[in-house]
Image (cartoon, rainbow, N blue to C red; front, side, top):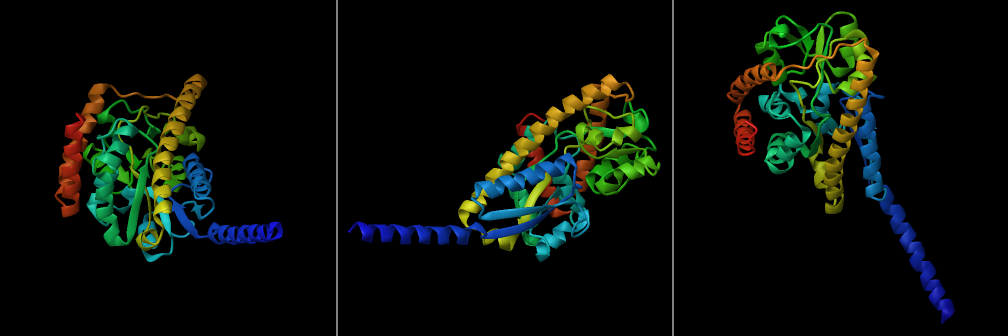
Length: 339
């Protein structure tokens, strides 16, 4: 009897081992980032991929690729749709040329003063539903969003208010962000993030909408542009985590839930860690004395926001999708006392 039980136990253990081995490599995906390798944002994305693997018990593995690994930064939407990539983590503004709605939902310049405001809109204010209305007809599914936070502004020239933007050669992603800066008198151009440092160094541009203060500092931006504006006055990008819709639909419900929960955790991780790094980097920059940090007054910030709000309406008139984004966004902002 004991020998029979032992044999049953061994057979059961072997079956369990086979089953575990079979599910260990159940899904393997390649996601491309809009950030270069070594960038703090990219490192956080790699950490997210590792957590997904751990949370799924190894059933779901995501290889995180830096910008340009497979396609250019503004081509990932098409690549994910076609199955060339399985997913991407990227600034939604890059696809404003396909529909102005992407630019409006990605970065309604002047709308947000804190990451939590934007993330609440995505999760509970209709943002997630809007994103999937935009993406699913294109063959993608929106899992969730993060953001690096309220971005600082890189500049080689002293900027103390809206008037100083006039004629400023600067980098900004296409769509609403460019239009707002153009309305404020600047001369924006569309460049990938990977070219910002070189363009500043070679005087192709004098300023850039790029990312948060600590990441700018870590990438040497302030070595060539010594007049950053902090806290930022302009941009808090929606960074989407999306994947091929057919591959999303093929996932079991538990792995879908793991992805959704992991992205919410990733957003907290990114915003918290980068905010902490910002405080350290700003203190170090002030101590060094080689960098002049400019903090715009409330009046100048209000002037810029007024310019931005006027552009929201113009963008909304350009497509049915953009109008819907505008209606849902402004309703949320009004109800929350943010407008």
